[in-house]
Length: 99
Image (cartoon, rainbow, N blue to C red; front, side, top):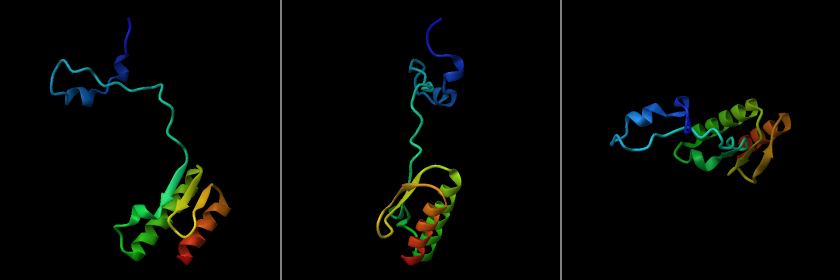
């Protein structure tokens, strides 16, 4: 038997198909995992007022730090390159405090 297994079919997508002869959507198990690098960009908070913007960025820094992945900060003074750990978190929080 060739083809994709039943466990790979995206059944909700199949149910939404407009025509019964449309091919089924399936998961692509061979795809590489998404990049583990995370960039926190101040531009992504553009719609928020001043204080809420800094609160959001601070929350992102703390969440990124807790994730154990490499992350960096853009749009707050100079760019903080990808990294992780206590020094990375402190450098990011210092930049946010002084911005």
